[in-house]
Length: 206
Image 1 (cartoon, rainbow, N blue to C red):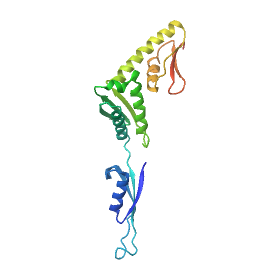
Image 2: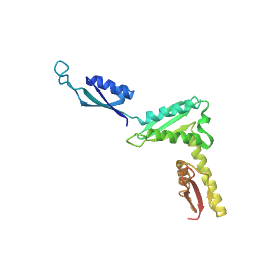
Image 3: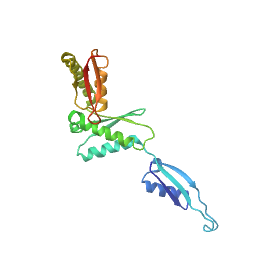
Image 4: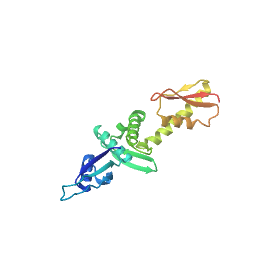
């Protein structure tokens, strides 16, 4: 957490100096008065400066949103960002004419932006914040696609009696595959490899 210490003749002056160093308004900082100072005789003899410490109040959700806006703007794409918050879960929903560019092939661009926004949000946060990034209801459509794929490949694994390896998937998509086949008789699933090349194996026999 960024913090600065400032010294001036009065507490008010020290606070203003500290805020200027942080480049934030008073609402965005926690102010701690270390020493209120002392004027001294005739304002000179025995005087002591005021000392304050100012800590930047980090808002992880705001930082993630600012990051997304900055990256999208640098990509030359115009997009609107809506935000939904529930406890420590935050969903950013993107919309716009060129939104397909932000989704990318199989959602790769969207997943990358989501991961980076997650890192930015939790960089200095005291409590973990889970961030989901969606666009044009892509997450729901992708989930349905993965569930259908999992069922189809499970049928194939049972029919051929051989294991089937899927392409590498991000953790949240691997969970969808595992959940879709969790109660499927004659099938077991497990993940193999290291990120970002970890993939799901659908195996017959359980």
